[in-house]
Length: 425
Image (cartoon, rainbow, N blue to C red; front, side):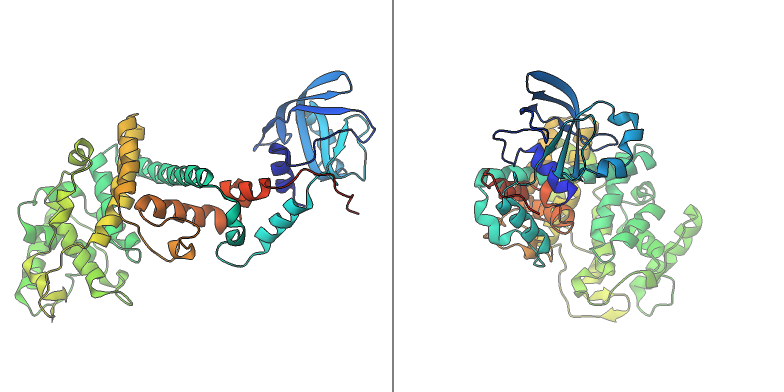
């Protein structure tokens, strides 16, 4: 028995409530179990109970062992002066004044067994063999809550960066977009690139793709060497002037990762794509005004040089390198939906918040090592909405064994019978 589980059992009345009595034999009725307190002080606040014919209103404290009251020095803490009931699992000590309820023997053994099974599982999904207990309504409601939790957290990150950018939404959007152009391996360094190179500098050169590429590749550190081919030499020449003009700080080429990557995901190709996208900036206002228009993302193809190259000075077989559908889904899921959610939250625009959710529902499923842990018997894998819910479930519930905070875990543990059980010695 853990105290967190005891809180869960008390909160949802998952114990035998028939003929309750205090350890002194007084008749006990729980009218209101109180509200779980996640801060300091008693565990449940503003509860209402009835002992014999006397109604009491106050707080309730729970412990595994009754003597934990003394061990935690509650008798010296004024926060516990309004405790009206001490709920314990093992009663090996009696409080001299506060009535005590012992739950040992009132908690179904099947609940304890299921909880222990969940915690002892070493599989990716601890509750997989118990999943038949979950109904569709519970799953769908939980899925929506998971997506909202994920978008809320991403939104808070966006609003944090917005504040750092002096409420410049376009700069914040530009940085977020750059982060996901970096792919998961180069996310941090690509985001650093967009921090060092202000988008307003790029806008001054938006009609000249060579100058845009010179700025991006130069600040990224890819032009700090001698080249054989004409195009990279031209970029280097352009950047030598622009670097002095804008007093730019540079990254180093070795900070970018290329190992164990498909060539189409090389940072050079991603930067070339990003350069083309800059020509559509400023972009966020267009997205806010028409969230369903993704034409700006459909026709991105790098400049001609990159049809025969993946890196500078290394010729490759001719290939058009347009952005693929899977990468478009990544951008819609991780950039467009969160930025609309944050924008709607900032300006209290419920339509934009709803639009952010709809984009996820209309985007294809994003498979990765996290979503692959869960098979289709557990969860439908059809949309970006499904994927985001699974990633949130994996990151913040399953891997942290937060079964008691999970709607699925709650449903599994709730499906037990409230029968009197023998006292556990």
